[in-house]
Image (tube, rainbow, N blue to C red; front, side):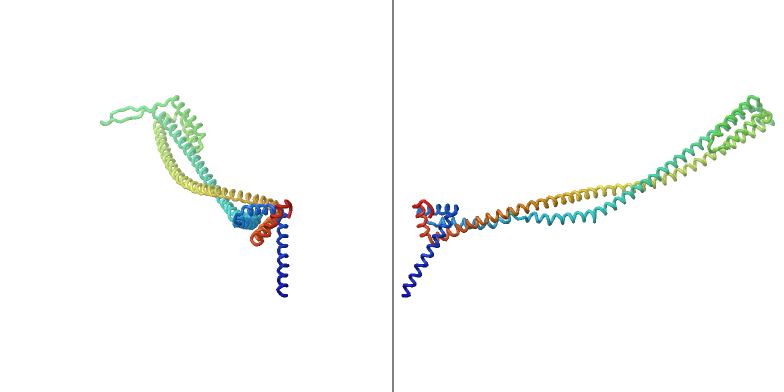
Length: 378
């Protein structure tokens, strides 16, 4: 009795299992992919070749579906964009910190240094200009004084000649010695000529800027020359000549002192000028170096500012792309989900077909044969 019950149970289970297999076959056949797959299997069964190659092909197809599903999600991810939106703001912060914390302060320092050195160079140049102007003024003053000395010398020398040329000398023998005795002959014409000479000279020397006393002196000589009776005295004329010689000697001494003082001034000028020129050179070199450093720093600042502008623009662009990408990603996710569902269905068909070929080949063959005979759905 127990044996009969067990046998009936097996029959029921076998019937139930076969019904499930047929239901699975019908379910697979409902999809286009399933029908294509069954057509391929049927052709393989007709050749009589071993099914190992078919099973391997189905297994490879199943593995490919699994691999493709794993690759699909990274393709629609925003990993690179998220990395940019993380990196670019940090880059912006670093660039601004470099500009505001380092480069701009350095530029301010260099600008102050350049301004300072420019002021130094300008000040030294003003000193040099003033020194040169002072030297030019002193030299012009010196030349005027020399000219006044020379003109006074010429006037007095000419007056001496006029006095001396009108004294005649006669030689005679006294106690065995040759002696000279002056014979003085002064005419009104000579006196008038001398008076005119001193009058003109007094007017000329009145224009002197430094030796104004010459004009008074020559006026006095002109007055003396106007008194002919005084010029008749040879002794008086000799004294005038001696006075002229004394004046000429004093003028020569004064001119020598004038030239000596001018030489000392020139030496002092050259020494001072050399010092100022050295100062200008040193300050000018420092200015050139500071300007070069400032120009190089400005180039660096321009590059960093350009990088900052580029970074800001990239942030705007990436942010806009991210918003667009969000929309694309939502669509891509939906596409992915649809595709995944389709591929999951195909993979399930392949997996179920592999199971049928491995375990239910007989039933599968019968069902496919029935389909071919009927020419319609199983």
